[in-house]
Image 1 (cartoon, rainbow, N blue to C red):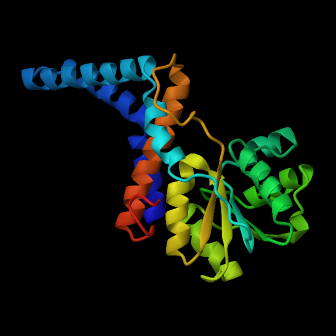
Image 2 (cartoon, rainbow, N blue to C red; image 1 turned 135 degrees about the vertical axis):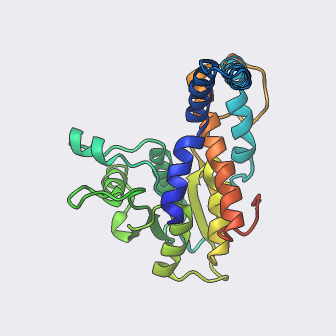
Length: 263
C-alpha cells in the first residue's frame, strides 16, 4: 500500500506538476465570485510564476542536486567481495517497440560496473531491479534489458546474480540481501547514480550490507555557480533532487534508511 501511495502522491508533488496545479488552481480561483478566493488565486498565480521565472533564470536545479551528488566520493577499497548495480530506467515499451534494449541513466551504471568488474575480477556481481509498476505478463523485464546491454559492453553476465522483483530502493537492498546473504566482514561496491547514492547507501546499510559507494551519472559539476541555464535541464535536476529529498525523509520516517542524511 505504501508503495502505490508514494507513486500517487509524487505524481502531484513533483515540481513541474505542482507548479502547473498552482497555476490552474489560481486561475480557477480568480474566476470565482468571492473576493477572498480571488485574492488566494492571485497569490497562487504570482507564486507559481515567480518559481518558474527562478527556474528559468537561476541554476536552482543544479543547486538542489549538487549536495546529493557530492555526498559520497568515489573511494573504492583495495579489495571487494562483490559489486551491486541498481537498475532504474530500463525502457520496456521502447525496447519492445524498437527491437533493441534501451536504458537511459542506467547505461552509465553499466559502464561503471564494467570498469569495476575489470578492477575486481573475483568479485561477485549482482543486478537489482524489477518493474517499478505492475506490467502485464509477456513484457520483457528490466533485468533482461540490463542483461542484453551489459552483454553487449562486455560485462560477464554469466557470473551475475539477477534480482528481478524489486520496485524501489528499499526493495533493492532487502531482496538482494535475501539472495546473496551479505555479512559485515564482506566489502561490497554499490553502483548507482550519484544523485541517488545517499538514499541507496542508507537502505543497503540498514539491510545489513557493508557497502562502499561507486557513484556515477553526474548531472552537475559539483560546485555552486551562476551559469547560463536551460529551463528543461533545471526542471529535470530540480525534479530529481526533490524526489530524493522526499524519499530520504519518508524512508527515514519508515525506518528504511539508517540515517536521515546518510554520509
